[in-house]
Structure formats: C-alpha cells, structure tokens
Image 1 (cartoon, helix red, strand yellow):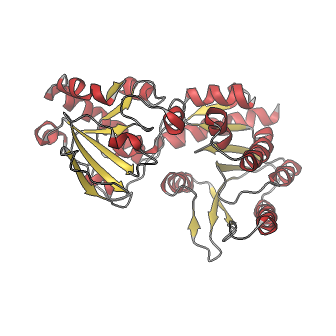
Image 2: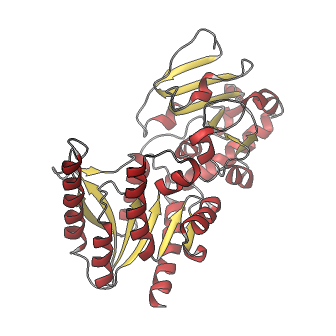
Image 3: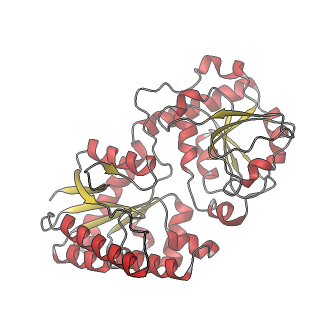
Amino acid sequence: MEWYYVQTEADDGEARNAGAKAPADVSAILAQAGFTRLGLRDVERRDVGGALAKLKGHRVAKNRWLEAVSSLKKGDGVVMQVPFACHTIWFGKVVTALQKKDIRLILLVHDLESVRLGLTGDVSFAQAQRFKLEESAVFSYAQAIIVHNDHMADFVAEHLGYPRERIVSLRLFDYLVPDAPMGVPVYQAASVGFRKVIVAGNLRRDKAGYLYDIPDDVDFEYFGDGYEPNESRPRVTYRGSFPADELPSKLDGGFGLVWDGPQGTTCSGVYGTYLTINNPHKTSLYLASGLPVVSWSKAAIADVIRDEGVGLCVESLYDLHDALAGVTEEAYVVMVNNARKVGERLRAGAFTLEAVHKACEIAQTSFST
C-alpha cells in the first residue's frame, strides 16, 4: 500500500491550503516523510451567485474529489486535512468511493465547524446543515482522527460519537521556518527586557477585542494587521505586519500572548470559549521563535505550557504585572531554553510526524478489525 496526503491547488496548478500556513506546513512535513501528494483542484469563485450557482459549485467539488481519489489503489491510505478547502455537501459520494477501494482514511483537524457550533451556535442554519453533512459522512468512515489536544479529543468523542481510542492528540501544531533564526539568543534573553508581552496575529477589534482592554502597567508589542492606535495605550508599541516565515526573527524577547475574546479580564465569547479545546497556531509561532508563552489558565494549551515549562498561565491580563514581576532573570532563561527545545521540534515537524505515525498504526489496526 501507499500513503497519500491531499493538497488543494488552484486551476493553474498552484498549491493552495485553506488557512494558509498550518495546512501548508502539514503538507510539507508529510511530503518530506515520504507521503505521496494527491492534488485536488479547488472550485474558483464558488461563493459568487445565487443558490443554484452555489449548488453547482458543490457538484463540481464532488466530481473533482471523485477524480482525485480515483487514482488511489485498493488498500492505499490517505490523510485529509479538515476543514476541506474544496468542500461539498455530497462528500458522502466520496466516502463511498473510498469504501469501494478499502482506502484507509486519517483526518487531521485544524478546525471542526460542528465543534464551534456545539460551543457557540455561531453559524447560520444552512451552514450548520452543510457542516453536519460533510463531517458526519467523513467521520463515519475515517479509521483515525488527529485533533489538537486531549480536551478536543474528549469533546469529539462525546459530541460527535467518534471512538475515543481512535483519536490522536497532536499537542502542538508544528511551525516550519526555513532559513530564519530563532529570535533572541539565550545568552541575551534576560538582558533585552523580558517583562514585555508580544501579540502576533489578527489585531482587528472585532476579532481580538481584548487588545483594547489591557492593563496600563505592562509593556505590549503588537505584530499584525488591523490595529487601531490609541493614545490612551502609551505602553503599546505597534511593530507592523510580517510574512509568517519572517516573523520569528522579529520577536526579540518577552512572552508571546495566547488570549482571545472581547475582554482582558478573562477569555469569553465565541473565540474565548473555543480556547478551552483549541490549540491556537500562534502558540507554535512563539515557541518556534524561542519565546516563552503567557496563556489564559483555563485554555487547553495551558497543559502544554505547564508540562514543558515554557511560560506562565494567568486568569486575567490584569494579573500580568505581578506574574511577570515574579519571574527572575534566571527563571526566564530556563523558560527560554525550554521554549527553544520545543521550538526546534516544531521547526522539524516532530509533533505532526509522531501523531501521523500513531494514526497510521490505528488506521491499519481498526481497518483490519
């Protein structure tokens, strides 16, 4: 048998990944590990037009999936990343095609919209039905699923009914950084001013409202798009926006912040609630940059931060001053060393490879039984 990974491409043949860096890194890691690429042409401009046009887009997507999997031989295996860039309400037809060839299927989850729905109800009825159709079809057949962490694994088992013993926890998303240094060297770590907090990502108020509800006794540095400068936040320095592969070399000390929701006192709302089962990709960015992390204490990612000794966990951003004040230079250097060790593994794709190998073993065993 041969193992494949699905990678979506535009009509011109250029590789495309929904969500950009995280799925692209997974594809690159699997390619380096010897998996064979299974190209899938995306459907262009499928959201343009009325209901009939959108339905046609779903039909075209189904046919392109069927065309792609037709090249698989009986008994092969394939890794698919969820959500699908080329989505279709007729994914059940694709599953039937896989069943006929006894194809082993592994799902690697970036986001499950049905999980978001279960937590927040933050989708329309029509979207909810599509998510359920697609996900129920593919989940019912998959031999193994890779999710972010044990919290998401428990949620998927309870709410989606998938066997817990066939779910693998990734723990951290890998973060490939070609030819980029890992931020500040260890010997300079404490001398660059480590009692500052770095935020990288989408800075728009509607997505990260907490950025506009921060304490005035802590220094912050923001990297990303959408920030609204305000003179009432004099201890915020905006550093601009950089490509994902360049950003790690721009982060020169301090702690990377993992937070979400509309306020700084806690993580709440749609995105804050999702943190209880989600691994934010920015965590991997910080660690791949050699930076320790500050996280909400109730976030799922807090388990890794505590276990690996790579940062601090707080209940509120207004606890940051005292938490940072309690970190000595020596303690910070230890955290940096730990972060760099984890970061080296992230840069090498170690977490993805370990999880995929476990999932392959489960898929083989569960399929044969």
